[in-house]
Each structure stands twice: as structure tokens, then as C-alpha cells.
Length: 256
Image (cartoon, rainbow, N blue to C red):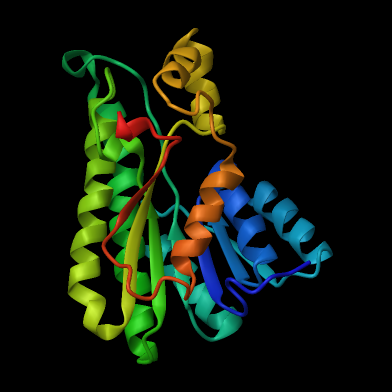
């Protein structure tokens, strides 16, 4: 049954082909949103759109690499051309990179992480906000996907940590700058979550998942749907006085 948390809101989801992004597409659609999905993998986007439409949702997709400014702009333009407006965005696209000590990290790893996690967010924000401002009616919302690594340090992941701290900085700066124009900007900071990125990390680092879970009060890895539920609430009109917040969704990890 469709509920009303995001009823009739046009929501752009980046990094929507897997993990938290795909879960967000499903949760947002269930909550009544019109979802526009973007990622680099067309086959997965097509499959997800077909799944959502089969359930009665309004959904469309466009292939883009958000680290390329023109492609991020095209994703926003696609949402506008398909549905005439953009009410909300979940900037979820990201990459994890290698777990390597800082002094051994290679330039190409640093560049890949920063291009997606920081430049990609920068590209999305400026085009999403510009579109929302042109609409001139306020009531818009953006949620950026950071990480607990945007709030604390973890070993052997310096560029990733720096990139996720940058997500927090962009969130707070944009929230402050556009509050009076009726655009709310918040972030979520997920803890360890089942995804392709974490599966790769855990596969290459035996025992890592157990170690992280041992440091998490709830003692487990999150399902991506649990993270998506928090993003849905932040995007909704249920929290109109909340902007510039970074909400840990981490089983209590950063509360230690």
C-alpha cells in the first residue's frame, strides 16, 4: 500500500542502481514519490524502473556519471522535462576506495574518491538548487549521503574520511545559504550497511565486519532499507524546521 510521506513529490535519486540508492528508490516510491533514478549502470536502472512501475509507481531513469558536471546537469534537466519540477533530491552516489595507510595511498585512488564523493555532490547540488530556485515556491528538500566516516575517523581510509567530511560541510553550507528560499538541506551518516562497497571491503579484509559490529551498540550491519527510511523522513514535510542537520543512522556507533 502506498503511504503519504512523500506523496506526489518528484525526487531525484543518484547512485540508484544498487545498495542504499536502490533501496531509497523503493522506499520513496512506496511513500508516494515520483522517482527519477540516475546512475552509471543502465541495465540495473531499467530493471529497477520496471519493478517500480509494476507496483504502480511513477518512475523514470537516466544514465549519468555525477562526477561529470554536464551529466549531473542532464539528470536534473531530465527530471524537469519528464515531470515539470524537482521537489527533492537524495544525493547518494559515492564510492569507497581502498583501505590503505595514508602514506601509501596512490593518487588515482584519491582522485577517484574525491571525483565521485565531493565533485559529484558539488555538481548535483548546484544544478538541483538552481532548478529549485527557478521554481520559486520553496518547500524543497535535499538529503546528502555522508557516513559515520564524515563524523569520526576510521583507520586506513583517509581520502574517504576527508570526502565524507566534505559532504557534511557542503550540507551545512547549503542549508545556511538557502534556508530563506525554502530549501532544506540535511545529511544522513550511515554506519556499516550491506552494499556492494561494504561487501568488497569485507571480502578483502576478513574479520572487518565482525570488528565493526563489535563497536556498534546494536551489534549488526544495517540493511540499506533502514538507511533509506531515514532519508525519506528527512525529505518529507514532517520535519519543516530541520535543516543543516547530520543524522547518524548507525546503530549507536558514533555515540561511543
